[in-house]
Amino acid sequence: MWINEYMTGRSFSAAGASAGEIRSANNGSVSVSATRDYGALPLIAPAGIAYVPVAGAPTVVMEGAGGAVCLGVAVTPREELQPGELMLYSAGGASIVLKNSGKVLINGREVS
Image (tube, rainbow, N blue to C red; front, side, top):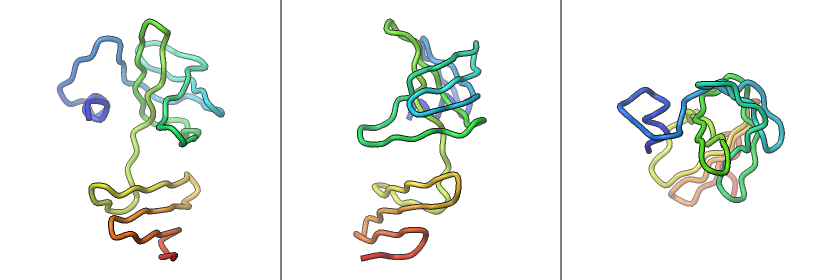
């Protein structure tokens, strides 16, 4: 994905995109230090997902005709995920994993 390539410093070029770091966040908006300081940027997330990123998380800001937006943060799952699997986790350590096998793990324990 181009966002990951951009954030990890691999060869990439996109007009209007700049790597940065979350300075602060609240429900729905973030402040980011990137090529310049941004305040109260809308935070983009998949439909049905709401989150507040932690300060210091790496991010990408995209500038467009409608203004700048924060495209989310880079994450590293805490366990090995296979293609097609999903993990939701919090900074406090709680997690939910949806496995390809149909299993659901909550905080590492299988539930049915």
